[in-house]
Structures are given as structure tokens and as C-alpha cells.
Length: 163
Image (tube, rainbow, N blue to C red; front, side, top):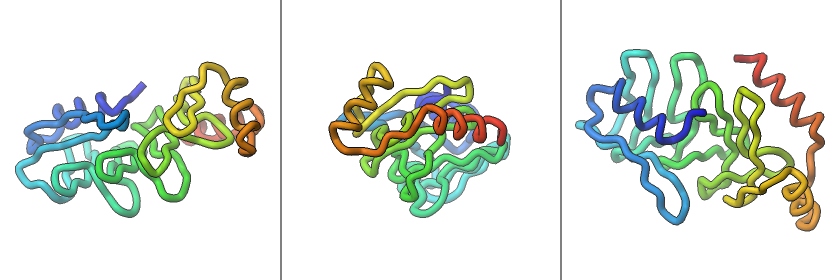
């Protein structure tokens, strides 16, 4: 499973101008910080992956901040996973994540983390639920819409077939 740490490692391996890439956790929110010779711009590595940075941080106001050579896109604002339209931020071709505006995992009505292998995690506002039933019960208590497992499975199959 690709994580923010694996993205940092890929940056270190593939982008010659990156002098340092590290993960910084503030109040439980992970941010990817990149130190480069030039702090702003678009950097394309030898594999054709494009990274948008602003002040040394992976960042793009509109659209994906990382465009992987395989066509997968990852959204970041100020180094944190972010997507204003409610879609998944993605971490490479095999992981989809849904995050709140504060960059923490959160999704109403389905898993906030899905991998191409079918593994799912249910999160609300940065809180991981041990089981889907715990998640569903909390959503129900809060009056939030719950999506059926069939809808989640259909969404997952559609996504997997597009890879």
C-alpha cells in the first residue's frame, strides 16, 4: 500500500533536484514537505511523474498536485491530502483516500481508504472505526447517509477495472 512515506521515498529516488523529502505530522495530520533547489514549479522525474510545489511543499490550488506517469492523479494542498469536489485524493495507482478539508481521513457513506486489493478502512474526521458496523452505527446516530455494501463494491469494481 502506498503511503505518504512511500511518496516521499519515490521523490528522493526519482527527482534529482530534491535535496530532502520528509513527512511532518502536526496535530495528527501528515504533510509531505519537499526541499528543493528551486522552491516553486513543476518537476518531472525520469519516470514522467509530475510534482507541483509551492514554497517547497507539494501543492496545487486546483487539480491534482501529483500526476503519475500511469495517469493516476493525487491531490495535495499545502502538502496535505485535499480535494474540494469530495472525490478521492489517491496515493498512487493502488490507493484511494477521502479526506476532510483539514487533510484527515474522513468519508460519509463509505470507506475513507480503499486499496486495489479490496482492503477498506472506515474513518470519520480522523477517527478509525474497528468495524464497518461501528462506523454505520456512528453514522446513523449522527444522522449521516449510509451507503450499502453493494454500492461500495460496485464503486470499487468500477475503479479497479479502470486501472
